[in-house]
Length: 108
Image (tube, rainbow, N blue to C red; front, side, top):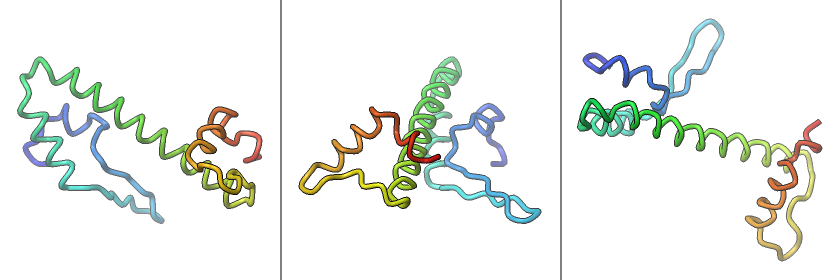
């Protein structure tokens, strides 16, 4: 991170996760993807940095939202609620499940 711009480093788009373990924080991430993002950012004209960063934040948020929904879906499955029917398309069943509220009534 030495030599990186402050705007890029603290843009909340980097593929890092900070996990608290006892009294220490462990940072897990992908150096390869981080470097690709940094190179892309630095190749832009400075006037484009803000719009690029906003776009990457939106993409990051969409991935995080999708991941949270997958975790909820998996949690419901773990609790033994059958979401798929014999011979049905699991993806369409998941879409139906999401349309019905994504298991809000099942996770209580």
